[in-house]
Length: 298
Image 1: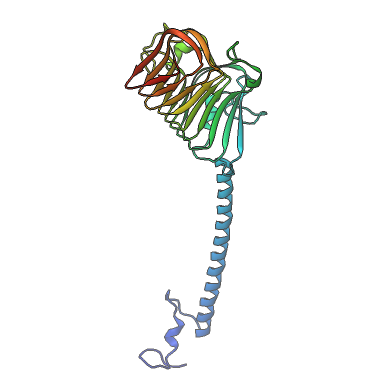
Image 2 (image 1 turned 90 degrees about the vertical axis):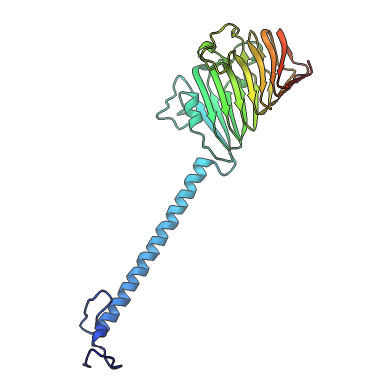
């Protein structure tokens, strides 16, 4: 064995000591230990990379499922009678009990179109859809194709539906107003949405003399748009305090398939525009325009 210590180029004794201070019996044993450790580290690293690939793949799958990245249609079902908000998965076999629970199951970001199919029943809910950035959201009665809201109740009774700050095409179809006195002061409302549409809906209960203390405004505004472009068609507004209300830079088209009588105010344009050519709506006051609002076609 060569002597250790000093600056001699032949010294190898101290080379048996590794970086952690462990002294090996021979230099070869120390080198082998280092190589074996490196092999184990590489093996562990490869296992870590494999696990990370699997986790990333699983995460991508979850994102695809939750956020509908494929642009497909997603159907969610609501049934007041046999639904259960706790165990529901949104299928026809396991529907939600309330509309709000189905709405809460919609992701904030997606490229899909979401349809909430509501079975006929009474839903004493103030449904609030908010802050969604997706392609479309539609709340539609399951019997919408066989009902006519201008002729009678649709069978799906809801207190109010409010779309707020939704970057989506938003539509309500086949719904009838109920329990207005306990609502927020409107039937349907769209505020800062990409587009809002109401089709085959019915508001016939008298809202002209309700207690407005808990309402959003000092009056009941049945169909209301704020800072939104939209359309109302195939719909009834009768005995309403304010039948159609467009506010704050909204642009609303009221189709000639909209009808109703005995309203207090038919059209209210508050710094907004209403196009109402041909609509068969009547009331005590036809038009109220404020802040430069305009109603065309009346």
